[in-house]
Length: 179
Image (tube, rainbow, N blue to C red; front, side, top):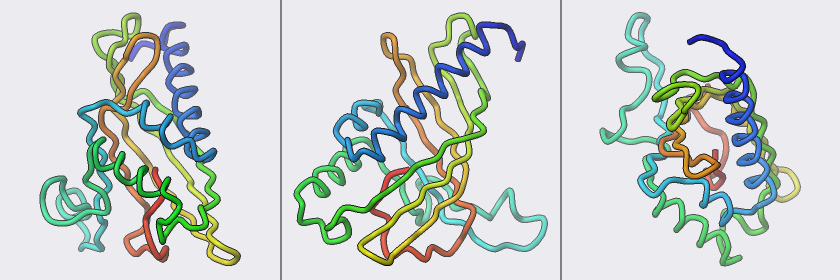
């Protein structure tokens, strides 16, 4: 991809969007966060397996729509999770977790139809999510994401998110947070 001024401006725009999303989640503004999601959203986090050398590409991550995964959701199911949390009687989020999302290494992987007229962008990034529950439960999630973003007016919406955790055993008691 040619790195023109327009490319750098687009990357900054995408970075700002992802940072805004992290802030909304950290501030527990879940309804505002839902507005960043496309109606046809795919939100997927495969489970990871330890596999023999040479089988990583084929077998390390579970496949969407096949078997089990940590998340294989859409906007409706994420909305229901938000509604449940906001009742104040959600066992896994009462009291609410304190969460910090850190996003870095944002890259533009694909831009359609062009950098100058970007309507769809595939972006890759790394993340670190820190969660503190009650007094003593601390969990750290580290990984990478691939997001397909779609321009809507003057902003963006997330049309697809694939989340890859760099661990195959989760020590957290639940996955009530959003990535």
